[in-house]
Image 1 (cartoon, rainbow, N blue to C red):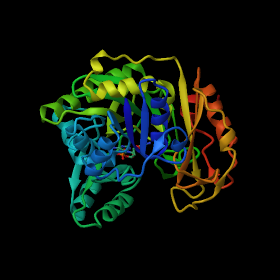
Image 2: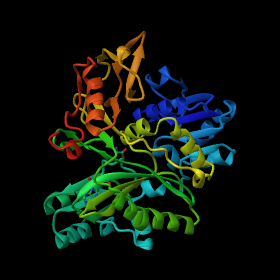
Image 3: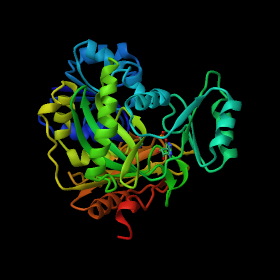
Image 4: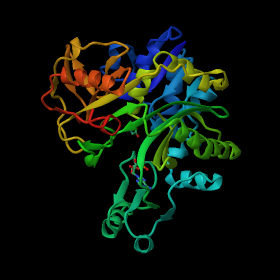
Length: 419
Ligand code: AMP
Ligand code: GLY
């Protein structure tokens, strides 16, 4: 099978790494890829937001199966166009990708099928939003509507900062905000594959969104993750499937936009009950790195069966294992940071099914590695226990010589306690 992966971050490096272990993969191209991915697969320059260009590229390269990493190409209709050209695609249609792109759409779907989530209201006018906030009180959550990559959310501790967040969000023409009830509890991520009909859970994870230790400082794309997430017990997962995932998928099918691909449900769990925070229509980054480390070569079979509507035949072959991914970021991230700083020690790291350094934003010129982004490296470890996975991930992180790099030392603190 000739496979194309779209994307170029640590998520896509881990997808490429898993795909390459499967003998069914004859050739792998990653577009655009990155310098780390280029060590294990062909990388190609391609505008992955241009559906026509992606189809031409896929046909020229006799691609049988395309795996879409980020949400933007899905929202742009790349998956639809590839499917129309007869190529199997892992990733939803643009219509189904609305589950991530539009908070309002997702809330309406939840209301239509009774899936538990925070109460909400949408405003495009500041005075009405302020009045609603004053009536509800704080804490309260303000979300810019539309694709904001997780950065358009303010969890406001008081009414004034909630109103200020509304003003900032409504600054642009045509902007709207969703104001939500604050949900207390512990967050965890639940990943399921869907082929339009069948649903197959493929793992749980917990991300660390804040930049600083002890979950302090500004939000980021994610500073580390581990899988499985102990708070997402089998009972909570069953409840999430029965009360959230299956009703939402049935509602999507009923509307004529069945969902196919990975559905990533961000859950808030309180007293053993899950409520939906948000959906993403792709793997999380860095959650994917931990999941791929655990799934290995079978990830390709699962994604391909998902794309071909054969999920009903599939089982996940679980090892009783744990994985952790620690993100190495450039100093200053998520604010301003320098690019081009030199990273040493990368060429002598162990690369096994228990430890992998995935690259998120590196460049390599004449054998010299440099930082080329905010989140730069993903030290990922696997083991029989979470502590073992953590020790392997941190051993990799410590073996890197990058004075301008930073990482949190406390990834997994919730699950590990004082261990
Ligand atoms: P979202 O982009 O919707 O995932 O929101 C980003 C983050 O804000 C989530 O991961 C939560 O930590 C937090 N958040 C969002 N909505 C709520 C809510 N209704 N109650 C509490 N926290 C929330
Ligand atoms: N790590 C969170 C995300 O990928 O959205």
